[in-house]
Length: 532
Image 1 (cartoon, rainbow, N blue to C red):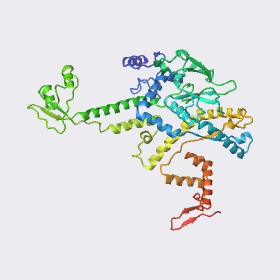
Image 2 (tube, rainbow, N blue to C red; image 1 turned 90 degrees about the vertical axis):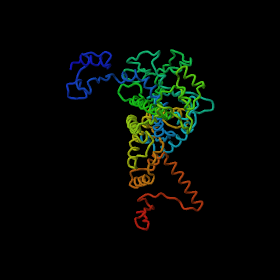
Image 3 (cartoon, rainbow, N blue to C red; image 1 turned 60 degrees about the vertical axis):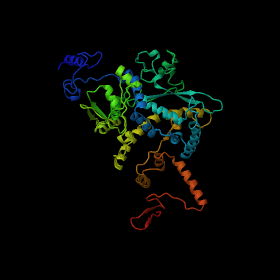
Image 4 (cartoon, helix red, strand yellow; image 1 turned 45 degrees about the vertical axis):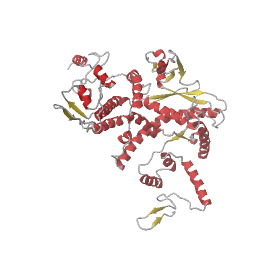
């Protein structure tokens, strides 16, 4: 089939191929790959965009953001996706564990532990108060949650590191989270090769500056949006300190802005939402309808027979304007009907027998698109056994770990480095040669919310086995449960000393194969494992 014929058919059936498509600009496959065929009926009218990452995304980004926000505001499943992901990735917040690279710094392990503990104590005074927020309303954990939600719903988050000295505070580094709608080209100019979506780029694609609108575009309806007021903020200072944190994920090379998590499943969400709402409305209407009456009697006689007052204002409305009028039916009443009158009971089939199966299939499709298994998406484990639940949670855990890494690389670590730089320059933390060894001093890990257990007994046994054969550590096992292993051991030591003071037996860990521990035998007696 000639390309001219394809273009004419597409125009006839309303398929928009490319705005400037012509017979010479499109080429058909030689036939080696059916997916590229221009003649096979399944794909002959399939001509998707062939633009760059920004050409495909930036013209649609505003609409994608608005629709994504609408789904998370007004759809329970959409709101649940964001909440579930947030709870499992961020939860109550990330906990800093400073781990300077002591080898690179020429220090000892003991020095690193002591330096890390002092730095963590200083960080807690900053993160667990409102010192980190330029507006003095959020703790750092709350800011992290706000940044993460924005990354899911809007596809990106923007934070401005500000230097704001306040009376009585020893911290000056504070962050202002800015909604991504405000990042746009000045005067809403068209994108160019050097200015895309409000981001100014150099020849290699490195952000040079960000153009931030001083007020949100959505505030125009309030009359407080001053048109044409943008601020150009360089990406960093002359000595390399970041001035803008643009937290987003690049799916394609050359991508300047982020894409909402729900972008790929917005059509399914919209259709499923409409279908569910229509079914609920139909079921509600059907609940009010008891029967149909077929009769040659005038409407006034039927209304009187059903107990209605034809002098009522609503009835007069109906008589005068043909408006809807529902006669009140008296409870447990025996209604006399005239000859020729037929009362037909109404037995609606709402919701459909396939309603649950169909909606679950659609939501499972959506869950795959956003990286959540059905059990977590619908919060329903009633159809799952232990093995299936464990497999689902492990699959979800890989997704959560990826989100944590993204949040760590683009938000947590940069914030920590900016804060640490201030503390070092202020003399609160000792770090000789900081700028030459910034990575070594700033190396850290973050503790996350507990992973949780499906079957605590089985998984505790697995923990003991991993510890006994030497493939895990206390630090790792505690971290998976949202605990710091040193805090746990300090608390255990305190409790054991107190038990000894009270003359109570001390509690010791029971690890298979560990010296002094014991393993229940299959017989009547317990077998003690003695030190070698």
